Length: 204
DNA sequence: ATCGGGATAGCCT
DNA sequence: GGCTATCCCGATT
Image (cartoon, rainbow, N blue to C red; front, top):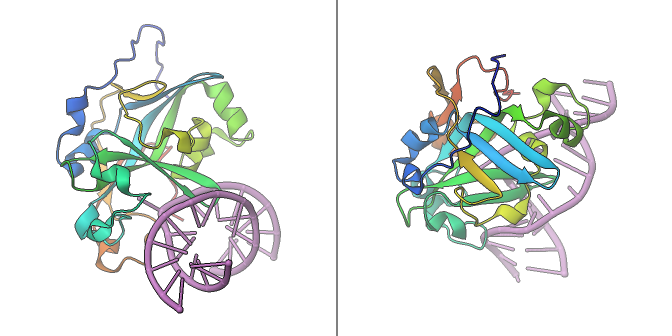
């Protein structure tokens, strides 16, 4: 793993304008960004290594398919850069609301690479092997201490925000995970990951 | 490969 | 109020 001289880095919060780009471009551009959580237990940081785009109105796999507007999906109709969290059984999953405004697109964060706060992450992940701390959407929220409290907040605001991270040069593309019941949408190549990064989720 | 957790949401009546 | 499905995970076979 690459050596990082922590402390020489400054965590620069991304500009709001960053989120105003086409959804599929943003999904790729998110790779390498840092998710930073100023948690009560300390600083927790993960580098985004895998994302999935959900193209609201025309995408059967999206909660907002057909512009379905409910209490849960409401935030996706708001400003790009808002946080969309939702609960699935025992897990919280976290998304980035994408452009254009009034079109309910979002990008699911599927995996991150642990960067800072490793001891706390290990505890949150019940001493599992490091490879399994953050290699899935439900796992990374536990490792980073993310809960439904973040619903509707903005990704540029503390305590949970996105910061400039590392340049990612090799990007792979493929179909999304866990949406078997979504007809045509099953095959859309809307999943992006950093090629060969060991923290990319297992496809089962 | 399968199963059940224990949390909503959304749709139905 | 009831029913069903879910952008998942961990344990168990």
